[in-house]
Image (cartoon, rainbow, N blue to C red; front, side, top):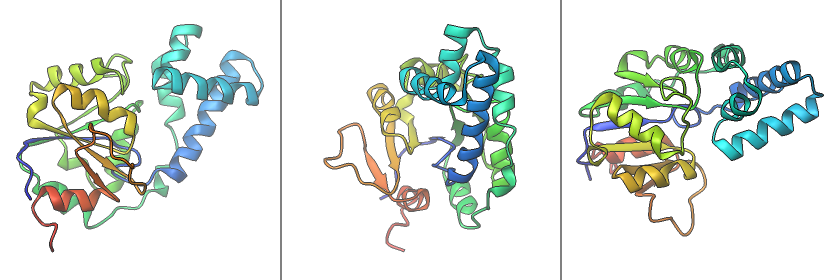
Length: 216
């Protein structure tokens, strides 16, 4: 089965690569930044970080809204992590390169994080652009407006696009707009929600299906 779509929208972290090691450092940097800026103990900073993430989809949105934190400074600081922990997958790039049409990154990260990840993974030349939370004007997934801004910026109809994500809640609003959706992850949602069109254990499995290679 080859998917009849020509705009491929990829999430970044835990979709293009396993982010655990890098996420640990970024998370620690977030907690430290919040602790310094709000002058609160680390335990309270961690609680703030997690609460804003779950409430707004991205911690920085709550920090800006409630504490007037400088978003660009926060995103630059917390993403100044050691990207050398990432290891390129030699099979992934050729699969992505075969996808017909346009390829975009849509991430709630910022501060140059996506660009550094793509460079480290050897994938930088395969994507037309990165649309991060700063480009989305601090409107993170899963807010519908984030997807609307993405489609408007790059001039495509969601009905021509596939959204490839590891986060279940980010798929529903996109599916309502007409995106085909693919959930990437080790756990198969059971029962599968109607807004998940495809599920794959890892990205390469889905790409092979999308390219019609699933029997190889």
